[in-house]
Length: 283
Ligand code: SAM
Image 1 (cartoon, rainbow, N blue to C red):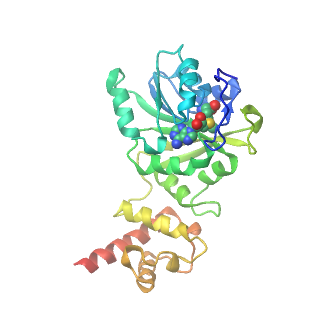
Image 2 (cartoon, rainbow, N blue to C red; image 1 turned 135 degrees about the horizontal axis):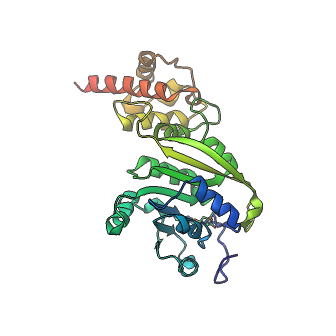
């Protein structure tokens, strides 16, 4: 394993370090990193992936939360002149500002790509944050637990789907790239992993009147996924159960359906029906 400064990996921070150079190269190849890219790496750990990225990219900003790892991380990537190590929490990081700062420095015109062997305990929170906030990336390549990867890349309207699946389908084209055995990590996790790539769409598949309400409908629908839509959405925008029934009728969606069966187009139609009813009420 790489220089560790004899650190004990923290289970609670999801520290399973990659210990196979072929896999790190394969991840970088899957992300199609090249000399025009600024790569923001999430959870750099001891730098196994960081080095492989630095070989191909113009610049790398490597974010790592655990302060204990920073000296070893810096040392392990010291041979590369294009890596900046940042000790920060990705959930509190403004990615847009970080990319602007890095590109304004001397590398303007670079394509931003995000990459990471994600800490598994916050995979969904990280991806939701990156999709909900302003984000300049053209693609995001992540290693996650295998079952989570399959859910993230599920078709919207399928049983495995959740709010995050719909959010991903709204912003990205998701792809399963390859599976990775648990044997290539130290310490060895209890699950296998999968690398996925989310290519950001230039044009969204639907254009809801209010994006905020569209997201709220998706979240409320999946928040109580065993409930019918009429029940799960009641209260949204101050609407009663009867009003929700009316909005669903206007959207052409049967009120007894559940969120997991809906397409993005149907979510958008429901949110537009609610938008028009609530703006009408305010007049
Ligand atoms: N990239 C390294 C590799 O592939 O060997 C480490 C990957 S390990 C699965 C995930 C890393 O994310 C750990 O080093 C952990 O400390 C870091 N991490 C955990 N929570 C984080 C957060 N909120 N922000 C940034 N990094 C975090």
